[in-house]
Every structure is written in C-alpha cells, then in structure tokens.
Amino acid sequence: MTLTHGSAQPPTYDVAAPPATVLPSYDEDAPPPVPRFGLGRPSPDERFARGGSWVAALGLAWLITQRLLPLGGLPWFLLTWFVLGLVVTAVTASMSGGMVEVKDRVAASVITGAALVVGAAVVSTVVFVTARGWKPLLHVNFWTDDMSGVGPKDGFENGGVLHAITGSAIELGIALLITLPLGIGTAVFMTEIGGKFARIVRTVVEAMTALPSIVAGLFIYTVFIIALGYPRSGLAAALAISVMILPIIARASDVVLRVVPGGLREASLALGASRWRTVWHVVLPTARPGLATAVILGVARGVGETSPVLLTSGAAAFLVTNPTDGVMNSLPLFIYSNVRSGEPVAIERAFAAATALLFLVLVLFTIARLLARPRRSGRRRPALRRPALRRPATDTVKDPS
Image 1 (spheres, helix red, strand yellow):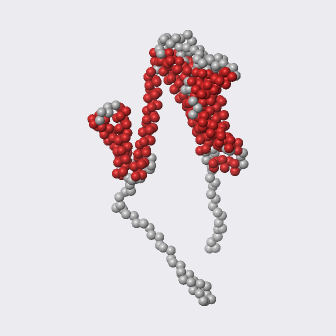
Image 2 (tube, helix red, strand yellow; image 1 turned 45 degrees about the vertical axis):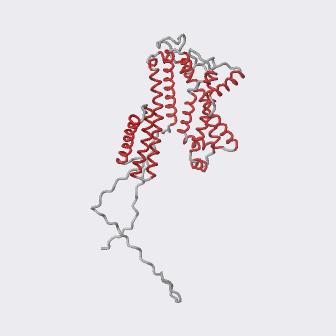
Image 3 (spheres, helix red, strand yellow; image 1 turned 45 degrees about the horizontal axis):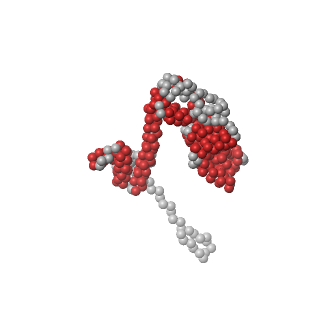
C-alpha cells in the first residue's frame, strides 16, 4: 500500500489483488477412504481385539489356577480371569493406541465387569429363592387363602399368604400416601426456596437416611402405641414404614430437582408465571422420571422391613383389611415367623412368600415406571401449510413491431 503526500490530488492506495481460488485435484488412483467408527461403534478389528483379549485371559487363568497354583475354586478362577483380562486388554490397547485408549478400554472393562457382578447377584438371589419355594407357588390356595387354622407342619394344600400380601399392600399404600407429599414437598423447599432453614432441613434429612429400622419402629411404638394408647395395627406399621422411607424419597428427590436446568425456570418466570406455577408446570414434569426413581428407592427400602413391623403391627393368621382394627400381618413378618419355626414345610412356605414379595416389588416398580412416562396427547398437531409462492408482478412491454 502506497500513500502519496504533497499534492492536491487525493491519496492513492495500492491494493493487492485477491488470491485466485484453486480447486483441489481429484486423484482417480487414490485408495478408498477408511471408514471411521464412532465412540459407541467400534471397528471389527477393535471388537476382535477386545474379545480376543478376554479369550486369551481365560486360557491364562485356567493355566494358572488349574496347573501352576493350587487355586481350584471357581471364585479364584473368576477373579484371576478378570485381573488377567484387564492386563491383556491394556496391552492390546497400547499396541494400537496411546495412553488414552488404554485408560478407555480398562475403564470400560471395569464398569462392564461391575455391572455383570451386580446382575449375577440379583439373578442368583431370585433363582435361589424361587428354587427353594416353587412347590407352594403351584397351589392356587397359596394365593387365595390365609393361615387360619393351619399349623407349621401342614401340607401345601392348606393355607396361603393372602392375608400377608393384603397387609403389605395396605401398609405400603398408607406409607406412600404420607411420604409422597412430605418427601417431594421437602425436596421442593430445599431446592426452590433455599435459605438457612433449608440447610438445616437438608442436614436432618441426610442424617435420617442412615436411620436404623429398629429405631423407627421403637419411635412409633413409644409415641403412637405407649404414649397415645393406640393398639398395634397396620396403621402403626405404616407410620413406622413412612418414617423409614421419608428421608430416602426427600434426599433422592432433592438430587433430581437440582438436575433440572435453571434455564427452564428462568424462561417460565420471564413469561410472567409465578414461582408456584413454575414448580408445578415446569420443574416437576421435567423431573418426573427421576421422582419415580426416588419413589422406587423408598418402596424398595420399606417393603422388606421386618423389625418396625414386628414391633408395631403384630402377627395375625387371618385376613385383616382394616388398618386400625387390631394386628395385621405382612410378607416380611410372615417370612420371619415361618423361618423361625424351624419346620421344613414352614421354611419352604417362607421361601414361597419371599418369591411373592419379589413379585410384588416388581409390580410396584412397573407401576411407578408407567406413571413416570411422559404423557402423550391424543390430538395431533395440524400440519403446517406452506404458503403458495406468488410471482412478482412484472411490467410487460409490447413489441412495437
């Protein structure tokens, strides 16, 4: 750029010409591009390397535990296989990638192994309980009768667990009616309101999460039964269960509500909605699946509690549907009393009741998941019609010829 001074003419600038656009040349003899796989889609070579690493570790584990060292048990074999699998996976990953690839594959293997261990524990528990108590489950009277007039040595053709199933359902239903508004309301207060008192409430809730079940049963027994003079009943057991599951639901709901993006709250408030309408119509519907998970955790904690029910409800061999009318049996208490009897028939009936308890928990979890699904409106949105394009009006000039 050149600037000229000392003349009446305006200054002139020397501007370089823009570079010419050069198109890349296409090489017809070049090899085809190598396909790239995403993080969740490993290539065939990577799948072969991962599977081959664990197969090689399996052979090494058999050689070490069965031939070299006196470690013939199955737990030692599985533990050695897992450790050698991690080592071989790290070696194969270092051959094809860097340190990041090694850490990625080792972490994925550890997480997958932990998930398999948890799944194996759950499956083995269900299979063991079902295998020990499948004979009483085949009798219809096990689901339709109670234990009125049935002794611990009587056969499976007599008696059932209808009274225990009904008692557990009634007690858990009352406990959920008490804890759902209190737990979710406490979580909303801690998350949406805040303040110094919210910190105190959060500390109390976190401390009550580790509350022993026997303490909750003693609290209801001392206050509700001894101090207030009410008899042992299903209502007292429901109160004890609600004390157990209230901090769990409140703590889990608090964590879920914190995950809701703050931009949704700000957008609702910017549109003129009040804080209550924002929480009711924006925050809670967004966190519905997480709140259902919180309820599931509370149900899983309360449905299998034995000591609070033992102290507050008592055991009855007949069907009771009124939670305020005397003692009421439940599945955990029925299992405890039958196993404690020492009779083989009663113990097998207790395992059958444990299988029924697992089935009841599965049904409750399924109902909670269905209630947590987002609602779908039956009305279809009208299709947007694109406006017809109009040609601009142009002046036509006639040919003078």
